Length: 260
Image (cartoon, rainbow, N blue to C red; front, top):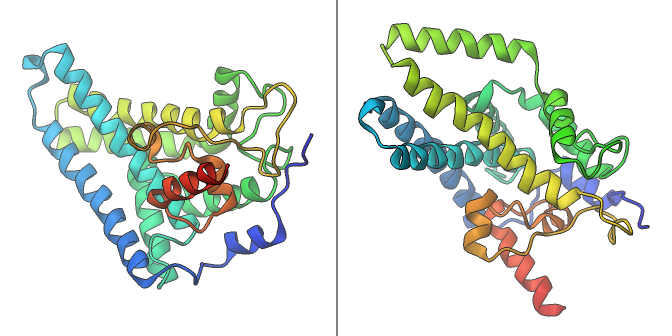
């Protein structure tokens, strides 16, 4: 079994913001980030204005799935900020976008997640990895519960409850709309992120791992890779090249498969 340990070079890449990214790529990162945030906000406002009593089940389901996808985009944006690739030319702007994305996603602490994410990259698949569950490395539900418990705090819950009732009463947003398009998509996106970004790539298979990252890539075609989790399924490439933004991962994955 291969020992799951990131190299010292990769540890430095996690801490230092990469200077190898092209200037155009750096600018693209901030445009993509703000684009995701803007589309999420506009979509949410539009969905808040709908009369859900007149929507059929199919359209309602599509709307929830769409908003779930955008919530996942918020977290992926914050994740890229943790790697310094949202705006590598200015660390303060980069971190601000990361913090904003996590607040919009669910009042998550950027500082806490940043610390845990570095541990995940430095000690993947070990007791020091906050995203891994050594006791039940193949049980989705128990691992998901363990995963969420390590990131969820009661202060977030009370904060979200306050926001829910404030928005409902101050802006007269129907409770059904808040539940269907704000609460449920956020919860579903956590399942999406965990399943495609943690469970499938890091699940221990029979015979153990075959690389030091304790990760594998999910070989979906590029379109489905994007739809399922913004290419986060190309997870071995992410650990191998943590300085790459999410939209560059297919290029790294295809380059590896062409060589093989």
